[in-house]
Each structure stands twice: as structure tokens, then as C-alpha cells.
Image (cartoon, rainbow, N blue to C red; front, side, top):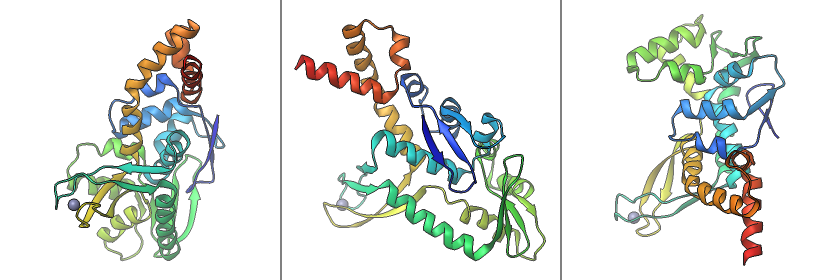
Length: 263
Ligand SMILES: [Zn+2]
């Protein structure tokens, strides 16, 4: 079991370990996939909110931080990417720390929070509400909103956000400003990063999404799941479902043991 202390909520979440069964459910990097993954992993929270609702109510920024923590736990802190350089048409290597990436985002959020937010509050129904210094009241965009906003036009999305996330519009701030505050105060770990190509030293921009990176990492490891199952089954004669229920960490440990014993 793994405990995660929420960054934006006064809540602690307990998660089951990832296992082969959960790994197999990841077939793309969509929000629906990540919500299904968290439905499998969420075991308990320190709130009275039903787990299914809690998952849908987690703000996008909070969910990204949870995914970053899971990445650090399962795959380590380092992000390694090989984007194409548009200047020399060669691949170059980018490495950075997920923890530092998160800290930079947290610091940016904190300065925006201090500038605009008067008070924050977690309602009984699990909604996190920000009372702004302007007198307006907003709530952060969450997984349920993301599902509702799938395949909607920009105009319909704005209408939806104004109706659902701007809870009280008391000031004379224009609607556009409140909509941009919804983004500013919901710092997703999905950003354009300035990088330098190692081949031609040209400045390049890399779009990095923690959600996509984490889910792609799980998908990239799926081919080795079959060889792990084959190796463990042939050594211990365990059934497929028994092996799939082993946590990913346990499974890797067994594989290491078998490989080292067989030389
Ligand atoms: Zn280059």
C-alpha cells in the first residue's frame, strides 16, 4: 500500500500497488484510461467521499501530482525523452527530474494562489472551492469536467466552465479573466519546456505531459510482462492469474531472482 498526501486538498489517499492486471488496462494515454487506472488503485481516503466520486473530483493538477508520485515510485524520478530537433532533424536526448519539474510548478502555483486567493475550502461533497480576493468564487477543473468536455468546441467548453466552475461572479472582472484564473490556479504538469538540442545547440520546445509520459511508460513495459509471466510460470508453476496479481515490484524481484540463479 502507498500513501499520497494531496497537495491541494486536506486529504490522504491510500493506493494499492500496480500489478500486471492493472498494467494491461492501459492501452492509451486518455483521461478515461487514467481514471480507470486510479479506480483500480484507490483503496481508501481520509475523507467521507465515495472512492469513485473522489477520483472524478480530484482536480487535474492534483491528479497529475499523484501520477508524478506513482512514476517516481515505479520508474524513478528521471524523465528521459528523445524528441526530434526541427533544426537539424536529428533526435536529441532530454533528461530532467520529475520532482524538480513538480516543485517549479508548485512554486508558480503558490505565487498565483497568494496573489489571487483569499481562502480555500473543501466542501462536504468533495469539491475544492477557492474564494478569490476579488470576491468571486471558483472551483478547480476535475476529471468529471474533462470527461464532459471531451470533443466539445471551444465556445461550448467556455460556456460549460462559466456555468460549472465559476460558482459566484460578484466582481467586475471580465469572464475571460476568470476563465484564465481557472487555468492559473489548476497547475497541470503538462507544459512546454525549453530545451537545447545536443547536436546543433539550437533552442527547442518540448511539450511534456506527465499523464501521457507515465501511461506511455506502462505501455512500453507491456511486452516484458509476457516474458515475465513465462519465466515465473515455468519456474514456479503458478497460474496466470496468480502472476498477474503480483505487484509489479514483486514480479520484477522474482524475475531478477530467476535470472540470477539461471546465470
Ligand atoms: Zn538540432
